Amino acid sequence: MDEILDTAKYIGITVAEIFLAIYFCRQYIDKITKKIPIGKSVVEQNDTNLDIYKHMNYYKELLKADRILLFEFHNGQHYSNYRSALKMSASYEVYRAGLDSVMGQCTNIPIAIMPKLIRDITTQEYAYCPDIEMIKGDMGNSYNFKKSIGTQAYFDLPLHDKDGIIIGFVAVEWANAIPDHVHLEENYKEELFHMAWKLEEMVAELTDMDNKMKKKKK
Image (cartoon, rainbow, N blue to C red):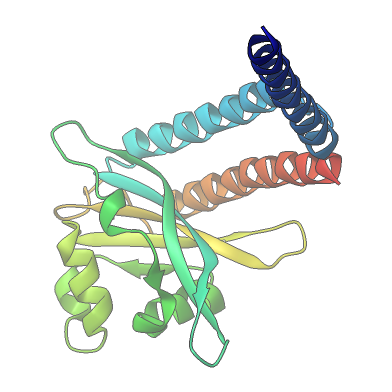
């Protein structure tokens, strides 16, 4: 009988310890997260994501483009000397029916391998190429990358944050010659800049939402 009582007592203590551990873990998690309304944040961010895709699709159709990619600069990791390894990744993509997604090929690309393309985007506020073969000899890495994702012509524009810092760029791309009605050096150039400005606003909204969540966690 004593052994049974001792066993029951041991089991009871063990179960109580488990419940206490669960309770304190839950208290700790609640304290860290402060019960942030994740569901609300997901809905808000998803609404903005949908707006971004809607906006990109609109211009894809307007410009008869085959693909539009939104690239963002980031620090993927560090080199051995702890210098930031600046990279770029496509965070949004829309493309013409019949094509395949290329986002998998547009992730963690070191910006150092395409310095002339990045220079054009960041200094003259756009990079325009009506025929990819034009840059084959002078911009080999950019040529190889663009060709690898089926690009024959492109128009890339920078994206800025609220302080005017360039945080990425939007790439409008064609798999063949640019349609005759799209005069990129004239009226459609203004349309492209309007597209970039609107995308900047939407990305800024997402950044603000993310910052608010981080503040609530502290």
